[in-house]
Image (cartoon, rainbow, N blue to C red; front, side, top):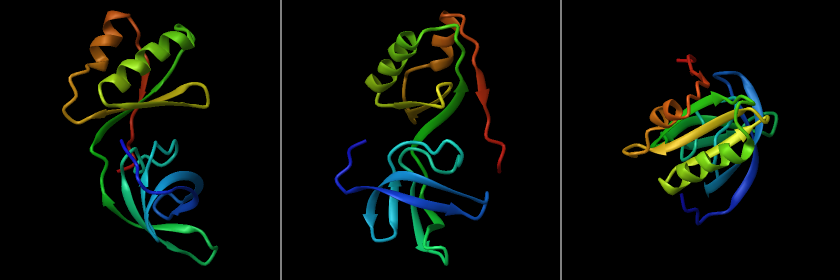
Length: 141
């Protein structure tokens, strides 16, 4: 995903969860932003999601509405020590080659973003290597 606007760190409050977190986002306008990666705690805010904010009484950005949902398919997994970090990096490189994005948070939670019509089959790759990670399912809605 190419960015042409300034990357900023914002303190963002989401009253739906309710939580506040600092994150980096692409600033599209004064109170409009696009996610440049995935928020680990707020599953609404994934790579490419565009949202509008307002400054609340605490001086923080507060989500007013999601303007555009991410076009990526996002999945999260708990990693195990069964594979080395270099083996995980090989998978990450393959994801990037297919136009996707991957990140690891807290050393053990992998988030994978793949374009909607991507031909890379993560489940088939897991099956080949007999890797059975626990998938983290968003049951917020």
